[in-house]
Length: 271
Image (cartoon, rainbow, N blue to C red):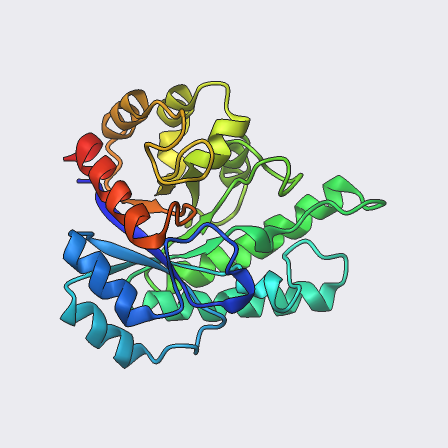
């Protein structure tokens, strides 16, 4: 069964990003619980920004699960990526993500690698850069497996990365890794830019999908753009996807309305 999820960001430096609730963890959880969401996806400045016992208490209190934890603060705050030409920066990126894996694993939740994947920088060799990415993902995937969770890699659109932009490219690259504990994030916003046919991509490479970001073509909550969810929902059900549909979307027109719109659309397509 596909479960509903809403995003909560607690990092001031990314306040212009696509997250529904901001700053106040408990207030966001209370609203998510009241609306009937199954889980939250959490973005924090570091792995120790929230004490694990406190988060466990809040999740129990509001009857929510932790679906995943984001690692984007590693790039936004510290400038770390897995494909930086400086080996010391890459080591720090791996360490930051490892800590986030440990944090999420306390709740059985995976960490997501989005912006921390980086880019092939001007003047750098693409093959060498991709080897750095593979090295980092192999190390991190094995670490995630040792903690009993998977690691989630997110193919981003061409305006955010020049590494892997489609589900097909991501799936083929994951197949080439030594670790088999890295799954893909199918972000419907990025897919609307890069995929020729979202339904076919899900059906063809669904074996690699471990998480879904539920946002419309304009990155507003689902229903505020032109994404055709009927075919997408059908494809996710066909491949037997049983993870979360998480609203990584702009809080349009405001956080409360965005959350309400998201849960209505979720129930329309998955309940």
